[in-house]
Image (cartoon, rainbow, N blue to C red; front, side):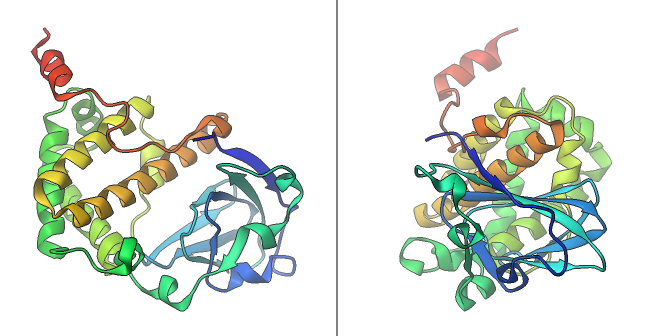
Length: 273
């Protein structure tokens, strides 16, 4: 898949010049990513599928993924710009405008949880709060036994706070997959504070996540979990790159299991001194 490519950065926008489409429920078209950067004041980026709100203040960024229903709410005087990135831009697309990349979110996509967006638009079998809890518990058991990821998580989460973290993750995945809206946190800033976090960690994270859900869930339910995890990983990677001033055009979406060690290779690795 081609790397992301900068298509256009808007001029500075404010309450009078913001594209009208962004004040109503909207989404970026397939293959289009967006970055909102606030220079003065603050605004709220509302993600309508999960019910999560991200308050973006001066000097901070917000990332919009393709086909992710959202809405911008301005909080007093504010100035910001929007950069658009394409996964596979067509010739001449750099000259296009917002109308080419933004579309109105349908009433269904703005209100329904992600289960309405899977192939066939039928809720996967067995997707409920109990399954979410089982997946989260099993996944983090794997994380805490993994040589690459365990040190990262242990450095960020003291042992006595693991029960709190697990409850937060129940709310996170419940909000993303069941539309409960229980999660109200801001996960991206916490990940930005982790030194040395890179693609090797995200590749392993996705591989362990896929192994976990495929061992627990019906195949269609597992596919939904994996799809959402891949989107979460890409959103975090883009946010980290913007925060670090890195070249985002080289950030290609990762697929769970790709680039990961095989079970035999992992056994050899874990057996090594």
